[in-house]
Length: 336
Image (cartoon, rainbow, N blue to C red; front, side, top):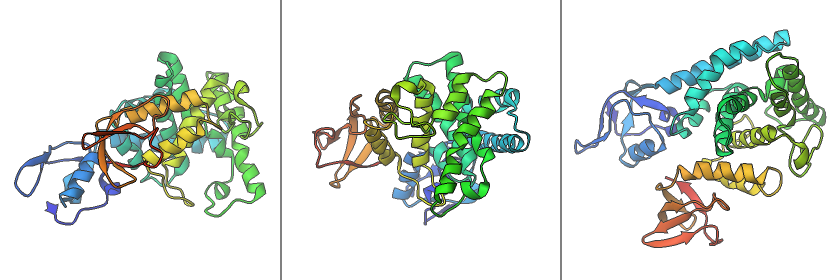
């Protein structure tokens, strides 16, 4: 049954409509079994059409996400108590689920659905693995290399199983000693993976180096660009982006387009510029044709994304073209 008052997109995005949705004039606007993305949610909000609980259900993808999170949580708990990574179980059961999830054409509803889970470490592991696959694709990886990178993303934070949950989930500012404990998760992760038969040294390095930075400002060893493995650089981009778009006990989630803009800025300092800008362009290319709101209040449509400044696309506004990479007084406020 439809209601006049609409519900928050964060309750419905990523869900599947189980019946046809019509507007007040009786025209079909959303067919049954559609997975709700931001486009459908925006349309429902514009038309002031709400959905009751019985109008939606978890989609097959949502069920996969839930299953993957349950399994990675159980796996991390086993690692916490045994100091051993069940590599064969992860590769046989969890990794194929992450591959299926990441093959969806619209990942934004999935990332928003991930935010409905409270356990940040587990949903973050799934999110980083999905993003790592995208980044690997954008950088020419395929086959076994892509699988290897995804598994590195899935396990990049496995060292957190050796860090106190109190410190990991502390909502207040960490003390210097607590921050040092957090930083040690990179070393713990490296040791766990390096001691597991079947997992490569590059995957162990991804756990060790995903907080290292191009300018040497990262940890645990303050390495600079040439001394950081390419897999580690790719996982770093995935890790930073997913952390930005995730809600934590101490911060709100950053909107997708704002996170992409921030990521682009980091490409000229702490993150690898080629890997980062290829990823941002990959995401922005999916938005070509979407309507946007600019910082001056005007609405337009994304026409072209430049590889040099992918977060500042060419936008058409009422027949006029605005290149946001050159028009510094106007920015992208929101993708509709």
